[in-house]
Image (cartoon, rainbow over all chains, first blue to last red; front, side, top):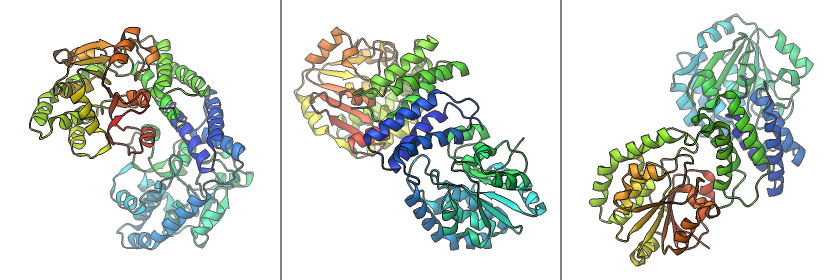
Length: 282
Length: 282
């Protein structure tokens, strides 16, 4: 997905939020904001939002040298999600359609997102809402058929805590799953440490993509990951960042997300809050 | 009120919204956004939000030459507000405390604000909410005493449509009122034309402040207005823009507004949505 002008205010807000999350004082916040404004002034043509977001967060990192400002909030997110794990499992177990229920649980977990604010959402209320909502984009039948046909699944993680909700979905799948985390910290995106804390090693092989950018920017990923990606018969891509980078990556890719911003809402032709299962186009 | 870094994303959103409201095409939107980013990069120290907002809107005007992009939406706002006028009058008439009811009605009208979005709010729902809400800042008793003592009132208008709600308050006051509109169009702020459309000439003398900036930036106002302002024993200042420019203009000034943004919420120590009657400090 291309970056819209509507994304620019958001990048500024992200810069400020990340700076504060990393403990920036007033002068540092001003300096970071000034550099973010200068970056945006180049109005980088053809870049996806995660590519610009990555550059913004690099500015914060250069100023503050903090490698992982979202560490604490990631630990808290995983803990809060794990507390729900038994209820999520029970909910899927008693469902008439466990796959659909588990897909919805996984999408519910996508509410854990601190790109804009560091307020913890009400997880159970989100589960209830996402379980009951009609799909805003519904390629579930195609995903179901693709899962039946695939001998393995590549699963691109999004955020820490959301990992626990992913685990519930992965545990309903029959094909072996490789779970892909970030190669280094960016925002509250899951790294190997976060996946392990959520127990993903019990149901999937965990690898990292060699990149500390949000979403999946293939040119920034490791050669190892690119080979795994190229060979994968079916890819589940979680969250807005992966949608923004992979929405046109072809029909092997299924994006599972909640719509949390009006720009993606417009891109998808669906409302904010919408529950999305969408096969990527070419 | 000083400008916080949190205001910067908002200025960008305003630039984009105003550009679109004025019919900018894609290239024009990009050019306007680029200039707004350059302006913000100067991180203008000591300026209030309306001063920066004014500069942002001037960029839009220079590009598009459109003198009043919010004309249609202002006309619609006034029409929608006038449709409620009989109910607002009845509501005040049957109140045990007509002044408080009318102050609340006037604050309810402050919901009409298209700085961020051009979506028309639900006016009657807002009236109901604002009538029942506890004040988030409550200098009503001081305002009441000041109104009893004052031989005249200077009333600084905010937006078109809100004018009708102001009229309801002005009609409950016993002292003669001078109603101050903008000297030229800015956002959906009321000009003389908008005040006349709302019937303000039936209850107040209408003057303009000689400026087409949001809020009340005295240095940009006409000498005539500055003299009237300097001599006024009591000033009612409506809306966020006037709060941002006059919150430290001294105890003659009473700001009546709804809190519509987190920055003002923090400045006032009150939540977004809060109903505010606040005497300015020095």
